[in-house]
Image (cartoon, rainbow, N blue to C red):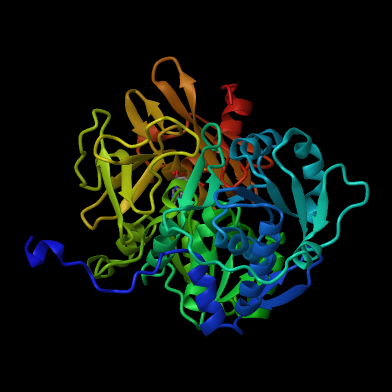
Length: 542
Ligand code: ADP
């Protein structure tokens, strides 16, 4: 053999496991605060050093209960420091942290706990009534550990307070020796379209994802940032922030259960938050609160908005009225989740203001190690010309290759995962999601983008939220039905809204009917629940 074929790299070979994030933060940013808002509204202060130390105690107590590598340990909790400890304590010993979304229906929670085969559940005490309903149907759960501490009297299931459980620990556990390809996190898609499916992250995929999200065009954290993840830790891996914040030494501010406008405003001011991340409805709630209170966004400099499309009116209000930079990102549980963001490039920065904003409202360009393409119904690549829609396909080290305990092949012959989203990609490489394939409205054989109509309707001052769904139609197959939730104290007529849309969308996209509702139903992750709208409004099976 020649030297060329045998030559191996001579670099140190450390496994890419997620415990490195918290150990790095503990060593180099040990005193950096991690602040948590409690259910009663006070704040509790911890630090990266505390979290790393207490997570090891949790590991030790879990080992003492017989938890071994590969076992699933669930959490059912809002964002707070103890929940971060739980992630690291579980993952550090090679067990899998399954984040359960408390906003799912009871039957879905039962389904995913049983599907995952969780052995231990760490839950917020506030969810005890929920546990009372679901746990009788979850035989795999041996022990419930309640945050922050204490245990209800006469509990029908075995419970112990979190602090009492930590006291069971002997010496802090050792985290060495976990394979970087071992599973560390399990997150089920919220079932916006179909039964929840489990995405099983590896240490390596979470490690690479967190580093990639720190690119300037994405999260761009520094040790001077104060980061507020409004996105819950039970939704899509919390967008990686429980890893990326310690990786950069940013202060972490955890909002707990209080996600209303007034609570977020006070947290931003009291803790000097500079960066926050969440779904559009969170920011809409916050801005509506500020409009009433006359308050401000204080130190906030940037927000990452994703999970569903950022309405133009929201981007405009945040940037023009509040001077906060918006990074509009797209991703899904299956992509860890961050995959694209609409940060400008040299070419798009040079565009006239209106076009620049249009680019910022797209879902943007892929982050490092994510590859994308568009495919037609026939599986052939569709041109990336900004106009031709196709099925958005994705691949990379942070993209799911299969679902947990699911036999179906989810990649095509070339290794692409079909996101279920329909999109265009323009000459600048910016993706624009036009719809979820299941939400597309097909009228006379052509696709109508529900997202685009919704965005236009939401730019009307009387509209708080809007949803467009396809209504069966004899001649055209389907026609758009517009559902509107008016802003508090505001009114608009159907005629006014249709007039507002004229000239802004194609004529044949014009909704045939407008219906006003008190509240547009939101699903478990704060997105408009179109399954429910279709079931309730047009009698389609959910
Ligand atoms: P689910 O809603 O099924 O639980 P996810 O939370 O993983 O699953 O959501 C992923 C989906 O959310 C994407 O496939 C896409 O349809 C939608 N989505 C996420 N971000 C955006 C965005 N910025 N614009 C439009 N749609 C988005």
